[in-house]
Length: 502
Image (cartoon, rainbow, N blue to C red; front, side, top):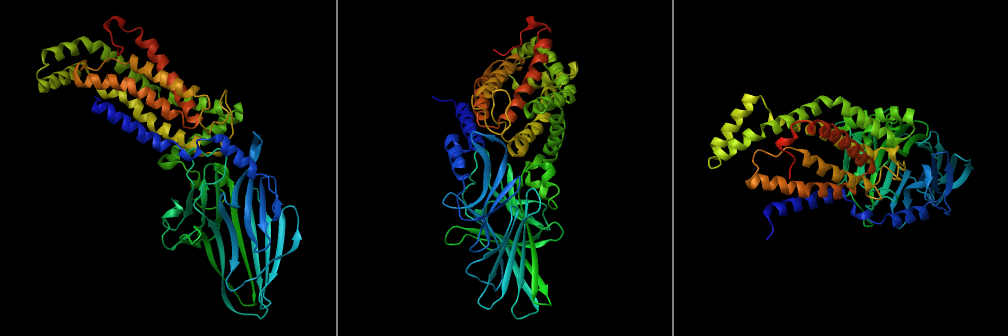
């Protein structure tokens, strides 16, 4: 018959596993093959490019139908990642349009390597000229120039719209990826939500709106002025619309409007200069400040060692040194607990039938010996936000994408050989064995402690199998730096008094 505690631990394990495991990305070989297939483009779209981006424009309606971003390094034949597309794998494209203007097809007026000019006329002889220009590393500018056949006055609406269905982006290496709508409003610096949450038209004022995934973000933005952000629920084809609606006024019959779109990586220094609050697209959760600080420090360290894995190791060492007073307190608490073991066991034996008196006598002993049982837990509380920040950083920051370290080919993906997670589980078990026995060496609490020693290390190992290797490397190094001082000090302090959990 199963113990209720074992069932509870098993359910907890399954719940945590569901949180961290990306069930849609089990077969990475298939994902790689898909990414390799889509990077070969033989479409009839008009192409412009620079060293970072390839933009493909549909001449029929002037929409941006495909966008590729160059990878940092070619790996396994993959040299670019597709961010936008319009096929059976993913519908995600962008189009600017003008209210009242409709044309069958655009004509190419000018084409260079990094710019494209399209021109069209409608039935009323109104002329629309669209200029596409790659002005920056990751920014596409679109200039819409409308010339009315009969000069008019007043305002005309320009629409800058993304069209996207609910499928995930086609990108090799998207474990732990959460594709989502992202935007900034006058009330909130950063908001994100799933497209499927849009059940009715929503309107906001903000500087940018776009779609985010692991390592990359695509967004229309206006750095200087807030624009009207509009979002629409899915149409009959399951396609959502979101973007800007802008009014342009003219007194000459000629209307000119500029659109800026960002297609780029989640790098702190890149995002910070795009638009107000745009840096929050580097999704670091509720520990954003800590994660941002980690990125700054690791970029600094990388400047010296030129290896992101070593940067993680050095950062871990630095934080371990900074938190060393807490670890010293923890070790002292362990030593004191070991020395108190005989007295605690004597109290337990004397008052084993009176739990209230047992608790009072133990607290009296703690006060007399000036021992704080919670002191040993302080390092754990301090390290928890650091661990969470490292998880978010290694998952989201573009710096770790495709970066290898020792046997690990990609620090942003899970360890393919499972070496680091297994090491983590073994060291966690060893650390638990070194801990002094709790005062209640018998009964239910002792059974729970024993079961945790058996269940917890394997549970952590399995969870770490699917986590980004960068955060596992951090955890392994941190555990080594914790265990070694414990082994040295605890081995010298009255080893004959017992203490290792057995």
